[in-house]
Image (cartoon, rainbow, N blue to C red; front, side):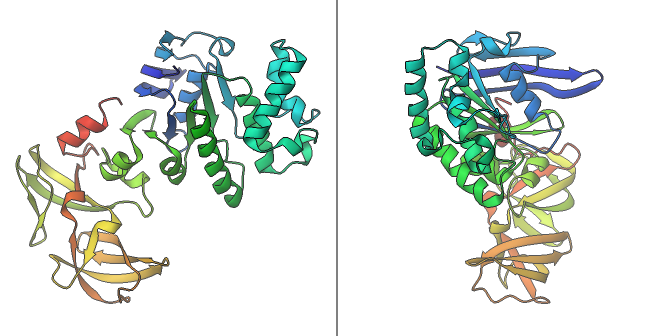
Length: 365
C-alpha cells in the first residue's frame, strides 16, 4: 500500500513559516490535490513529502513507515516538475530509461520496461526523437514516462501542466487522470487552479497562509465550505456574500435580511454580531415574489445559462439562471434562495457557523 499520513507538519524558513501544523491522510491509490494560491504552502508540503525539504517538526508516514528525515533516494517517490527537467542531449528513449540504467538494471529489462511505458503513454513512435523538437505536451509525456518507469510507491506532481497552453492543458489533464485510473498509483498533485482540482481530484486539501483551510471531496468542499476563503476560492463565479448584523439562536431556521425573513438551514450554534450570508450563484432564484428586491446591473450569456449581476441593499450578487429567462439591465426583480445550500459565516473568524459542517470538513485537517 502507498497510504501517506501527514501529522502536524510544519516548515519554518528562519522567521517565516511556510506550513503550519498540517494534518491529513492520502489514501492508497488516491488522486490527491493540494490546492491554494501562490505562497500558501502547497509546494513546500509536496517537497517535504518527497524529501526535497526536511520538516521543522511533524511526521510523514509512507506505507506505514515514518520517513520525514529520510533522503529522497530512500522514499521510493517519483517527482514530476512543471518544467519537465529532461536531459536535452538525450533522446526520448534514453530520458525515460535513465533511472533504470542508474540503478544498474540489465539492458534487456530496460528495453522491455521502456517499451511498456511508451505504450501506456502513446509515445512509441517518439522513442528515438530528440526531446528538443517535441511539443510541450509530448515533453510532459516523456517526463511522466521517466517517473512511471520506476514503479514508485507514489507520484508527486508540482503543477505539471502549468507551462502548457490552455488547449494542451485540458487534453493533458484528461490523459493524466485516465493514466492514474489505469495504474492505480497514489498521486499528490499541486495546483493553484481550482477548476483543475475539482475536475481531477478524488480528495482536495485547500491551503491558505500556510494552514489547511479544509480537507474533503470536491463536492463537500464546494457544497459545504468551512470558511469564507474556501467559499470564495472555489467556484466560478464564486459564492455570493451578504453582510448583516444579527443574532442566530440554536435551532433557528430563519434570519432577517432587511425587513424580510429568509429561511436558512437549521442552526446548531448560537451566534451574535456581524454575520455573512453565503449562497452560490446557481442557488439564487429570480422571481417576482422573492423575499428581497434587487436591480439587474448586467447579464453575461454562457450558452445554456447566463450570469445575472444584481445590486441589492446588502451588496452586489450574481445569479446563474437559464439563458432563456428574459432579463435586462435595469430590471427590478425579486430574489430568493435555495435554502439547504445557504451557509452562514462568522465575519470575525471567517469560519462557517454550522458546527456539523466544520467538524466533518476539518476532522482530518
